Image (tube, rainbow, N blue to C red; front, top):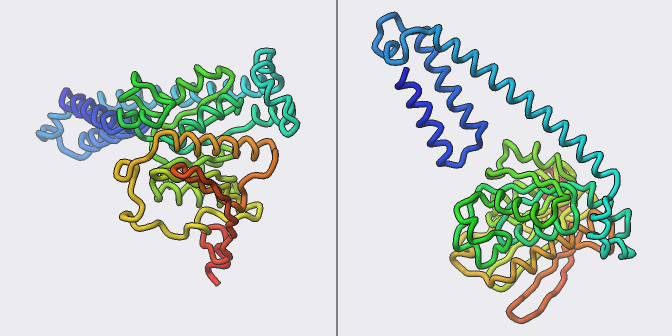
Length: 348
């Protein structure tokens, strides 16, 4: 039996080292236990492998039953907590405290936002994909603005090389998950916001379920695979998407909302560029404050989308050149042959 326990500990340790979520690690341990039970059932008495794994199936069945009871209890407890948190958030969202009214006073006196706009922010749920250069300022300003629920998904950890531009992370956070570092800073800045963290990479398996739970998505990722996945999922779920990108001294940003007649990201960028033409920040470099400029613009656009204030960048793209202090806005149009937001046109 000690061999099996050692293997379970090794599986758990490997999963932890690879950054696998706790649920996946438990699943791997459960799969190992299932294999042991199968060995006990299939192999005859006295078989070396059966003896090495305990020799008595009753012990493993008892452990499996105990494991199932504990797992079921954890699931029930998590659901009860989620319902309690949801109820608490609904009660909190009903009105502003005196502290909140004072905190958001500069918003409330703005004609374009006012009390109704600030309440819309409080009731909003925004997902930020990536807690790096663009995500850092976007998360900070969304929290400061009073967006009620902020989700952040990122599978990376804080590194020393991040700190030149990813200002939400501190030197003391090196080695910790970026989502946790960002969440700690947001909660310290504004205790009235609810921060939900997802320390994992956004994948096809979870994209729809996750994004469907939010009103608006901000994409600050640094790879095209994730950008196209976020765009496709937002288009399918009719969720507005704010996406920005940058390199060296230049950044760009737009609001993609094909459900309301604007192009999607794939309309403007139907194909990912050759990797040699789009080097990473590590290869090409990036001026430190540039992500702050573009990430702050993402937060501004998010507030405008959520409060219906002013004119957003829907159907337009803003390009900012920090080296020469120039900016320009260009019109972008939907592609009737786009396979993402116009699949019927693409088929014809």
